[in-house]
Image 1 (tube, helix red, strand yellow):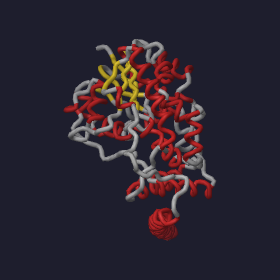
Image 2: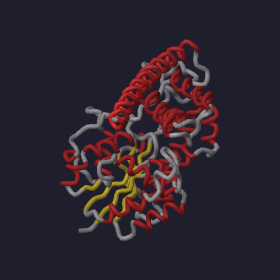
Image 3: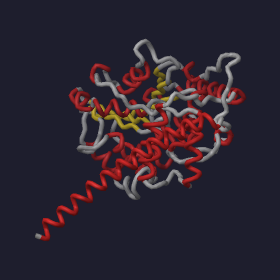
Length: 361
């Protein structure tokens, strides 16, 4: 049986967290229909794909040193043992350099490779990318981030620049096997329009994946992002930080606590829409001239300006009262976490003492 490999390379902030979790949840039923989502036995497939992507790119972050070593080769072994349809998905692949793309394609030689790229308008994607970078340990103000994006000086823009990404990844792939999934402005009547588009891109019947995911990588508000940015500065954290900090700051504080607050969203400044609109026009022209397969509507790539008269809130200048509310929520949960850990350590200590007394009898 011939093997088809759908290589989903991003972009970041295009619904990838939800997608990857839903694929994992439904991997047993998908397997019964000839769709393989490679994973480690007993492990999360999204972490397996993340580490494989890191290993391919020769990067080492998001875990203990060396945690990704050998993961790409392990992924390739899983692929070679599979028949039918195989889906590999991680958004950091979008920023791969040409030599890394060449390695991936060489390793998949003999398979029918389809490149899937999900794209979102920059009016929504740039605010989401900035606050995501803060969750990952960055300290830069929104204004500086946007300036660097416009100059092409950030990894995020290299991963979001549709023509550049697809020129690299699609160089050895026929255009009909390069699929652009546009992120809709409207979620559809059942809220699942993006998921349905992904299913079409991967050749999956939605009925094969009935379990829904509750995971998504929601964005922070202006006060929450400002607080986290200041905390990163105070703690002198960075993208390459210790996993223990990552669990506390990104997973517990940012992902579980701060995203749950009723917040003022981060929006693109009014004077930056012209850049976003220019990029959209360039992307759409490139798509129309390339012959790649579009799943969705290219008009989704055009940003929607806010309603006339709507006030823009500067995330670099947040009122102290707003930050205070976020800070108190953060302090509350961190205090509770410290108490829980102290309690667990106390129980662990008592168990060690009991074991020691039993040994000494």
